[in-house]
Length: 156
Length: 411
Image (cartoon, rainbow over all chains, first blue to last red; front, side, top):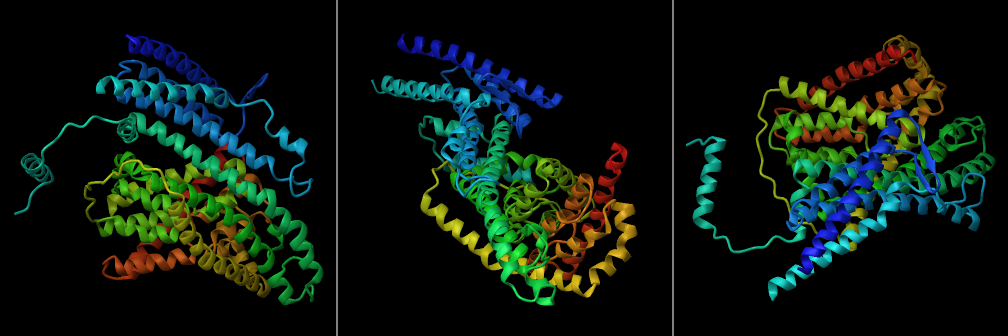
């Protein structure tokens, strides 16, 4: 019974996350096709590889949504895990790029960046994948807990 | 008795039914992930994400060292210091070692100790390290064989199979080990095709690093153009070259966490190869091109080849120098292009020409060697076949790109 509730909560969560990721992906692709950029508050959709990031997010959304059906099947859970991994790749590389860009002083500056410029490299706006990152971690934790509870049930 | 492929599979099925007993095994999440990464429907989006990760990592890592530190070291400290202390400005030795005394950056100076060192250490080395680091992680984690399975169907269309991904990916680092890796392919036809396609269409890590520096906004376009060229030429070669393209069985290992020790060892082995083989070639390239410039050979060649270069490819005659240098080091040749005055589209065409043009001397030597060891009747046939394909390809794809610019009204 507890598992049934957990599955239902998980499916709703994945559906919402899937729709959001899919929408972000579609928006990024549309923007790259029209050659436009978007900056809205702390969210931005611009920069190099915008179309690729959009395409990956679109697939991520699809993976999350497809995994909802028959979620007890381990292959469906694997799709949700891989969707999260795809978000980590985009977000991870964005964070890596921020770190790499924040250290050198730049053309006019000294060898290393000043404290102010260093912090500025990490300031908003951020790409959609960075916002999705913590929510994708929840998916992994959820699937991990689910697997553990299934194993315990089998052992019992 | 000769069995057909289907009969062999039937026989394998029968033997395995009689000899193998299957116990109960419940799938783990790792198994399921391993499966979905080889199925095209799920595997291709994952492969796109991995390739995106590769490019982002490559750009950020190489940019950090090159733009962040090496440009500053070489342009603001090393070049002015050399220009100040090196004796005999305007003399032969100065021209060869330091280059242009009025240059304010190492791309334009073009001396052995200025451009030569900067290209080798400042630009290419970080690019090579970034590339190999990512490649080793893909290899050791078990993802590379899965990529081979995924791409198998596509490569079959041009007479190759999934394992051809190994030389292709290696080639993105350096063409030399990639040509050696063609030994994993079964037939002479496949080995010849792979070595030729690699030498013509796949830019090495050094070239990629330089392309990112010189034409940052157009690297994607150049890569797409080369990729189309790779498959079109592969398709044609598969049709006209006699020989077999057999099916293979691939052993796909489980996913594993790469260890730091293994990564470090492999990394050192490959970077060591670059340090001791490629850097002397970069220096030699600058030396030779500078001597030819000094003697007026390049200007003479430029005048002779001007009609072909301008009319067919739409590039200025000054590109003769970089095209000659490309035989020694293609990265060096791309660096040389930045000093020539031309439009962006001419620059893109020149970069594509250098990619397609003659393989660098190290790759050239490897193709000759593999031609001998691969069991071909004679190495020259292997090499001449490669070169004939190359000449046809350069004129076809170089001219086609010029035509595209004319149609778009930018040439």
